Length: 445
Ligand code: NDP
Ligand code: 2IT
Image (cartoon, protein in one colour):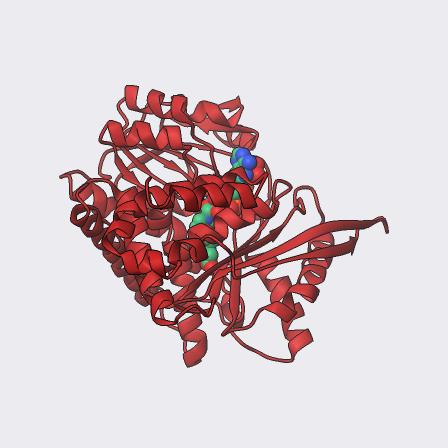
């Protein structure tokens, strides 16, 4: 980095103790260096300094009462990062590891991801350090209601439209939507990932995992390969992992492993998804229970070991920095030739280096997992029209969007002289529209 090095240094200085945010910014600015060289007007207009600073950051107290009458206090966050091309849009994460730096990294990534979808959505992210594990349904409801009681004043269908992420699925969206509607007395498309009876879109639940496979299918095809007959390892066993497993299997692959934060299962005959869905979606249990249903499968403690399983294609779908340089080297040594990121920033910078140096077909998160938010965008469209499309219609639109994301990212990579580097391509393609919009709108933000 030459022109943009000082922007990065300033980010590190002004945002101490936020390593994930620094990591996300560094990767993007490195990719954008040639764009800064080509567009001195963007440098002059302070586009780079402005794009790394959130437009607004909200932090709030979330008090709630557990089933024994004990009062707890969590911290809530909403980072409204960039509204140059549309209302802030991005998920809400409930996980004990959540802090401002994590929400900022996610919100920053979301700017470029949302731009790549071709739909008019700005970037934002929210969440809480609340841990949903082991909580009763009523505790979850009271927490969601308290969280929304404050968040409601900051969001709206044309202002900021949250959705799910880790620890936030259909149940939590339902509780939050109910509270929003009670406070505002408005029935609007303010959240996405809603239930089908109250304005949700068909295929939103499946969209991130399906979209990941559609994106990787394009990337594989470009190199004369496909999912057909391939062995696939997928980390996580939540929303993204489950539907990536389903689509990869439909495309002819055999998914042999899934994980959660405690450990992983290896089923050499192929993971039985109905069992995983029963354990995770219905019983909200642990992946270790899989072996009770399928005794020939193996469970091992510790989620990192999953990357030692030989595979052709790896799809990290759990969380940030879950795959490091060492894991990447093992994957490559074992013959893995493609990696698609369902999770946000799952690979460390060292792992990304290993993938790029070894010419792995590598789909970076902000391109490969954009199908979720893209379908959220389609849910917003349907809500505005007060119409509902069929599953097939939404799925077809999702597929088209993932194809155009691959096309735009690979064309941008080629235009800037590094044709197979989809990290650079996705960052540049995502940045272009946002930068042009910010430039045209003057120094308003
Ligand atoms: P879920 O909460 O449904 O599932 C998360 C999965 O990841 C669980 O299996 C969980 O295990 C595991 N996991 C979470 N944190 C950790 C951790 N610190 N270490 C190891 N495993 C962990 O979330 P999603 O499937 O929705 O999200 C997964 C990833 O995909 C996240 O990075 C998210 O940001 C990203 N994403 C999600 C989208 C969506 O539409 N939902 C869209 C785009 C990206 P455990 O149960 O043990 O915690
Ligand atoms: O990381 C993501 O893109 C999401 N969690 C989905 C966001 C959304 O608004 O659907």
